[in-house]
Image 1 (cartoon, helix red, strand yellow):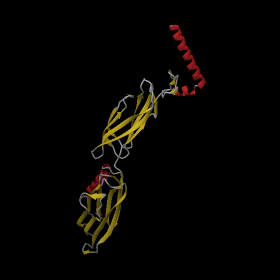
Image 2 (cartoon, one colour; image 1 turned 30 degrees about the vertical axis):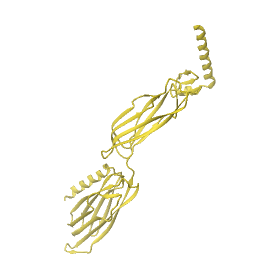
Image 3 (cartoon, helix red, strand yellow; image 1 turned 45 degrees about the vertical axis):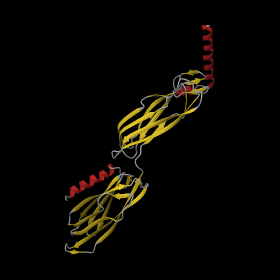
Image 4 (cartoon, helix red, strand yellow; image 1 turned 30 degrees about the horizontal axis):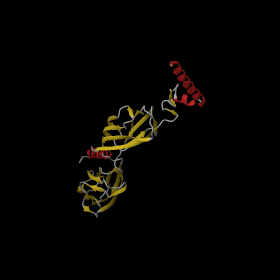
Length: 316
């Protein structure tokens, strides 16, 4: 087989290792007797319930022929299961010639995360002076492979721990996939009946690239009616997507906030202040409101109460 074609084939196999749910690819180089060189490309890390490949490239760089070439899997594993051939056998490899092949494996869904080893045995017979067969030349080859949990999508939510009536609160959702690209993504938000949601409760994305979080923010609007008892209100975020091997996946997260009665004085997220039943709108910014002394706030409160009473007297 043409040497350059083998190089291209090996490169494509290495690329498919990364695209097929493999985190990193490694290449082990072994030189045998008579300048027989092997390059074995394998994944450093793989995910549970995923397939992966081990690419083998041989080249006889010597001037003597090699015969009875065998690369075989020494032992079977219930965690890294061979799904195709377990042995590569060549009758001979003439000087300057090459051979490439691929072994396929499947990671069991029950394989615990951790390091595993694929053990191979290599054997060849050198034809001395291209005439006399020598004793077989053997080597043990070990490939360390780390099994990781199946890829997952992380949902992060920034929501208020406590809410009270007649106010708005920010609600931020971030979706993050640090292992694979995900496709046909739908994000749905389920809100309680007594909370109004300002913004879209459903978002769609054709692709979310791995290591690239996607975020959006909305507003939670609490009821105008006063809350009399403290209770928990849940918000559920549901993410549906297609993973790297074309399977539909679904994950969700629920966050809780406490909806309680409004106290005598409350500062809203937009800088306004509730003093009893009176709402003081923000003057310039949150920093300005927070910086106003308590005495000033109390003076404003008294002034508004007096004005309110005077208006009632005039109306009579």
